[in-house]
Image (cartoon, rainbow, N blue to C red):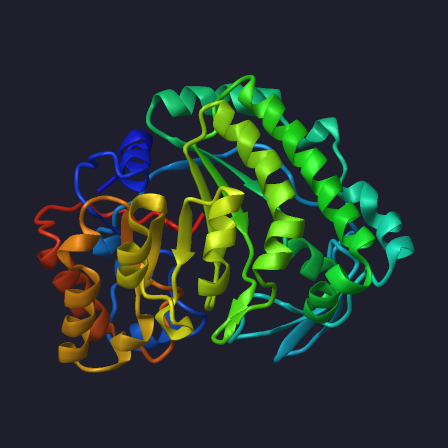
Length: 369
């Protein structure tokens, strides 16, 4: 089913949506498509369009990420991998056939002087906002398209510039550097949001973090409140004062320890809520009620088990307390390699039956945005 922006906003704000939403957030991991072809998948199934997932059309406005970066160049390429110099000046390596995200081999920022050399990439520039594009977005919004804007992550940006280890210790060893990075990004975000919202309201403000593993987040509540909160609130308070209803955060892993801190920062949607990272959407709903909505949360790994295991997972995650708004049901990340096509078909059909979705239309729209 193709949803319109207001139906989607109503769902995520617990405001009497038409029904629950059933989606595929991110699609298959690299290599799964070939597995499914060998198992007899149609090209519509490979593209996920034949499964009739719910989606909402999206238009993204503004650019709050790095601009005027380094030209991306290939340094070395073999049959197994490709090494590139990326837009931040990092050397990165992508393993072909297995990975979709390249792994940085070095980082541009080790001290304040390094940051000053690339700081201009994160400062405000008139090219970040296209007025003609905003006018087109306003027209699309009137036709039911969701208007989205994205800010860099409060942890994700420092880790992209410094690497995980330095980002983790920077708040202790060089808080001036960390504050300058986030202050610079924050000023840019607020100016871009100000320009956007003078033409069209933002429906959906998004931030990507990926700051946790199975054992927990790489920053704790103290770091979130000290460094991230001023940055997030600057963007969110402005956007929400001009009509934005949704502030969504994407982070893998176990985020339980910092959920309260991020609620204080303004976040009201969390995803993908990975069970392998001890994220249980049912327990989160019982604990927090309607303080935030969730997307995802269905254990992707259960699809490589039995039909009985799939049934148990769906009966638990799709229980009545999760069906009063505030839930976009879907797998908790990409469909893993080794997932049998028939198991995926069974999962989709069972979930749709449990949710009472009798009619559906082909035409998948990726919902991780």
